Length: 457
Image (cartoon, rainbow, N blue to C red; front, top):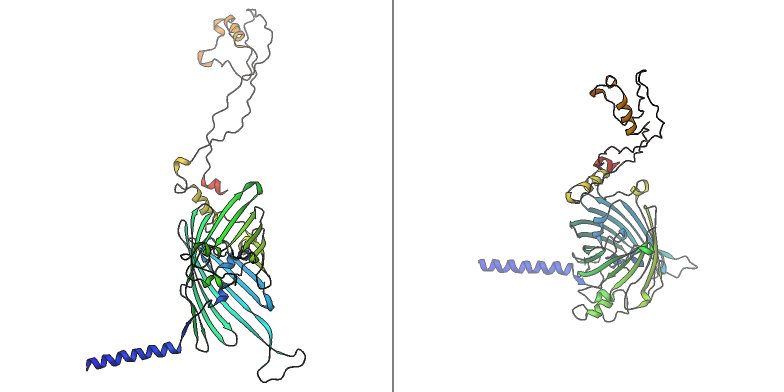
């Protein structure tokens, strides 16, 4: 009897699983929720869409959320892109810094087309331009968070929700994880695990589509050039490591697309790269390739930082098949609009100054006390007669005219008094001599050491 109950129970569970799987059939596809892969920022787009390697482009939070650890101020960013056939892509994001090298960002975007004419099945052709129109669009909402784990390692997480309004509506979601490690000064390596939750979409017809996770690598290196008053920045982002279709998704010229363990050179050719030169006065010039397999994927652009609080970027993107794309983005910081940049991103001025003079940041043996001496003018002290003449006059005076020992005046004085002898004693007059200037050594001064309060001033 117990065996029969167990057998019926197993059959019931199997039947329930079969019904659920048939009702929600999951089909593996290439590029589910591909709208999330569009690069909204003009800066990264001008650098060959090496978004994972570019730090400071807050329009790319969907790819490199780790950059939120470097956020010092609140930023609001906007971008607009006009594609072919009147398709438009609008994107807006906001970055909010948090204590302890953390940051959070939110973004909202719309990718679609409007005023598309259509004719219902069975309806006659309208006269003139009196067509019915419709709109199709993908709406995406994203939340990103970043935090510094150790001194050289930053971690970021992002989650995206997509709503699709087409001939049938649907919902999609995807989670991404990114990290960056500082190998040495101005040399970083970054990684992106795209779709760690899988990239899935569900349609109102009951279909369920998903794409498997993918992993990407990126490198960035900065080279200051003092005689050009600027700095070169080099960026590289790899093709997908796990699946060859990660290369074939964008360009039909990528015919091979072998994975790294199959053919490393072929895998490297599917990457993308860019070069940027940033002048010290705020101008940045950029050029890149969206795919190393064809020069028809060249990108270019420029950016300008205005008074630290406003950044304007432009990008030109060519394509081997479609028409070129122009992209513009603007970033604005409300804090920097009315304040000067802080010394430390998450510290106020007092905390930043205290941090500079603590022994944790600078050991005691590294402190050097430099005395600051004030300029002292050497006074000129006139003397009426030299010392030997004064001694001679004193020796000729009678003994009773000599003052007591405790009242003897010093030899050097501002004005030497004349020695008067009794009338009965003749005194030989002496010729006046030029006064002698005796330098007086300046008084010792106490070394001046800067304190915490003086640093704050």
